Length: 98
Image 1 (cartoon, rainbow, N blue to C red):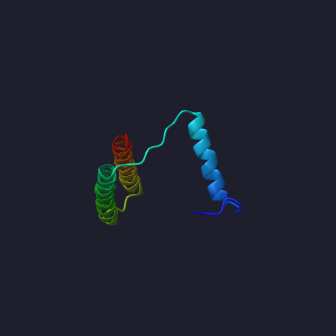
Image 2 (cartoon, rainbow, N blue to C red; image 1 turned 60 degrees about the vertical axis):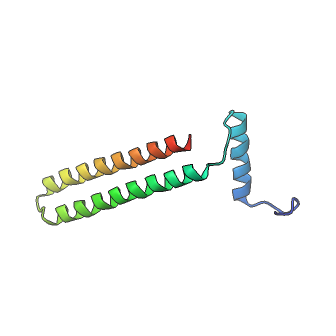
Image 3 (cartoon, one colour; image 1 turned 30 degrees about the vertical axis):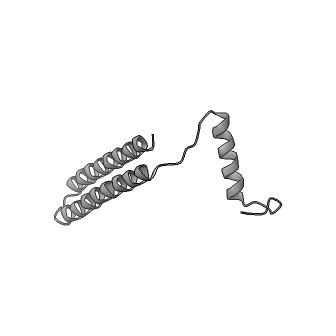
């Protein structure tokens, strides 16, 4: 452990402030179990693969489209789907943390 008299880094100071702020707000911190860590890693891996697959499909679709209006529509659909997958992943991870 670090010497108590040694100067703290700005990161350490910020983390102390955040922990104090959480404690004042009544938020308790608890360590994740090994099962939770494994489930979170699996969820992130699954959604990471889905997003990578979406990216590959999107790029292959763009190659064949020349019309700017149609390209924009494909881009919008891609962004919407990527946001949905990201949101699903974040919701699942949040549920696993509880």
